[in-house]
Length: 107
Image (cartoon, rainbow, N blue to C red; front, side, top):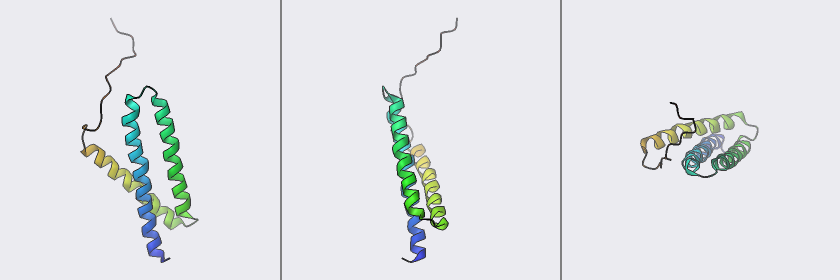
């Protein structure tokens, strides 16, 4: 395979991995906030997202630091894109949980 093509594909794979990771994080926060068992949502999501990301980095890198670096750059670019897209969408997709105070009332 042409080395330039391999580097471009590594960057695109990093972009995909980052989109899965950070998009999954955004989805988990939206679901977990309203859940009866938020710890289960957050822990399960973390394990799945981290497993996907680490496995992807492992297979993309294959001992080649240039591919690994471009994969990381794609991953970080996806973070910026997902952050921008979820912020740009406003709060239309986020259903707010009612505020709950666990602190004792002050008198």
